[in-house]
Length: 228
View 1 (cartoon, one colour):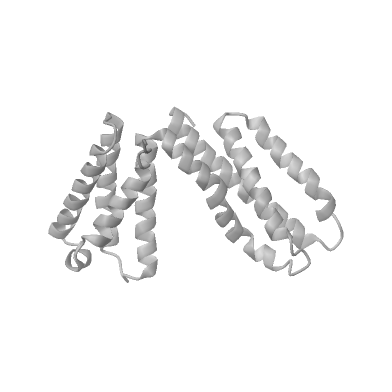
View 2 (cartoon, one colour; view 1 turned 30 degrees about the horizontal axis):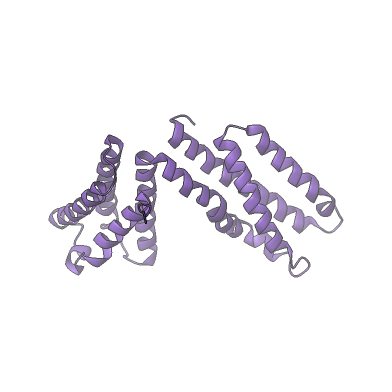
C-alpha cells in the first residue's frame, strides 16, 4: 500500500529538533557565541537540511528556501547566543523565531502545504490567541454565563474558518456578512441593562477573532499567489 510522504514542515521540524537537542553537544550549546562553534552548529544543520531536501521532489524553490532557512538559523543563533540571562524566556524567544522561519520556508517551497497549516493556525491556534486576549474580560462575567465560554469558542472556530476561506477566495463580502450576522444574533443579549461586561467581552473577542483570521488569510493568499 502506498503511503503519503511526510509533510515538509514535519521533516524540517524533526531536523531542527535533531540538530538542536539530540546531536548538539553541551559545549557547542554553551559556546555558540564563538564563531567556530557557531560555524560547526550551522554546518550540522546544513547537512540535516540537505538530507531533508533529498527526500523531497527537487525544485529551485525548495533549495532556495532551505538555503534561506539555514542563513536565518545562523543569524538567530548568533544573536540569541549573546543574550543574557539564558533562561526559559530566552529559550521561548529563540525557538519561536526558529519556528517562524520553518513555516516561512514551507510557504516558499510548498505554498499549498503551507496553506493547510495556515488554515489550522487561523482556526485552532486562533482559539488559543483570542482566548488569552479576552481572558481578563471573561473573568468579570463570573458564573452568570456558564456556557458562554464553550459556545463562544465554537462560534469563533466557525467564524475564523469562514473568514479565512473568504479572504483566500477574495470573497470579502462574506467577511462582512459573517460579522454582521454574528452582531445581529448577539445584539439582543448585550443591549440588556447591566450587561456591559458581556458587551465588552463580545466586542473584544469578535474583533480579535476577525483580525486574526484576516491576517492569516492575507498572508496565506500572498504565499499562494504572490499578491496580498
